[in-house]
Length: 364
Image (cartoon, rainbow, N blue to C red; front, side, top):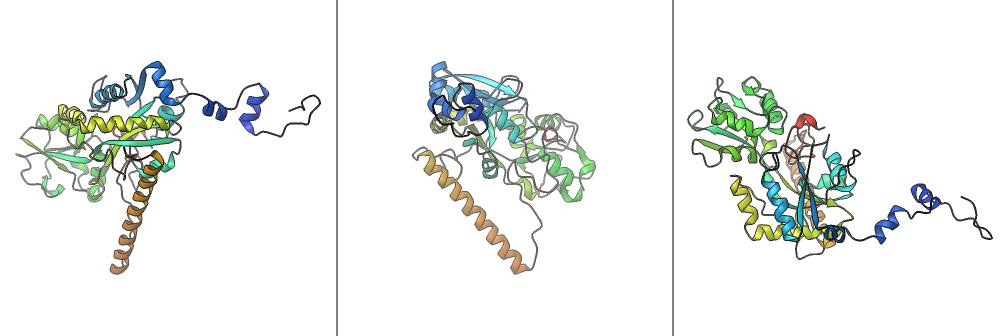
C-alpha cells in the first residue's frame, strides 16, 4: 500500500480489511456494525425465512408437518409472513448451522433467518460460537412400540421372543442402539431396511413385526391413540434421556431473540400443544422460558446466557463429582460415555448421535 501524497504511509492492515480498503470498500466488520439490524431487515421485507429439514416426519414431509405450522405461527406472532426453506441434512450439525444460519450454502441458497429442529445442547453451542440456539420446544427420545398381543409384558428386550421381529431404521440412532445392544444379541431379529421410524411403526401396524423402534415423534404420529400398541422408552441406558430441540439464529442477530418471546406466547396460549396433538405427538417441551436451556423472557440475553452456562457447568460438575466418588468408593473405573443428545459421539455411535432426527448414515 503506497503512502498518500504529502503524508506518511498508513499502518499495515491485515487480510480482508486491507484488500477492502485497497478497492475503496469498507471492511465487513464495519458494514455489520453500520448496517440495519437483522430484525429491521426482516421487517422491511415482511418475510421470515425458516429453515426446515427435508423428510423429517412428522415435523416436515412434502411441505406439511408440525414445524411447517410452527414456522407460520412464529412469523404471524412477529407480524410477518413465513417463507419455508427446506434443505437436506449435511454431514454434521456444524455444516447445517453454517449453511442455514450464519453463512449460506456455496451453491447460493441460504442462510435462513431461523433454523428449526436444532439440538439445544451445550457442547454444540460451544462448538458453534457464531450461532445462538434457544427456545426448546420439544424433547425427543428413543422409544420402542410393541403389540400388546404379541408382547404382553415388557421389562427388557429379552421379553421379545427369539422368533419375533423388531422393525427399526438401520441408519438411525435407534438402529445403532439396537444393533449394539447386549453385544449384538438382537441383531438377527431386526428388520432394518426401512425409510424411517414411521415406516417401522407402519410395519408394526400391519402385523409384520412384534415391535418397532424409532424416535418418539415417529412412533406416536403413526400409532398414537391405538389401544393395540404400547409405546415406551427403549430399555437401553444410552437411549433414555433424550434431547431437546429448538431454534437457531446467527449470533450477531441478537434482536431475533424476540422469537423467544413469540415461542413463549405460542406455548402459553396452547397453540404449540395443539399442533403437536394434531399429529398425535406428546412431549412438547415445558422448558421454553427455563434458564437451564435458553434465553428467559424476563431477562436480558446476556444475563440469561450466563445463567444457562452456570446451570450447565454446575450440573456437569456435580454429575462428574458424584460419578468419581462412587467409582472410587466401589474401586471401579468409568470407561463409558454418556449419550444424551445429538452432537455427543460416544463409542460406536459416531454416525448415529450427530443427527437431529433423520438418517444417521448421511452424517458423521
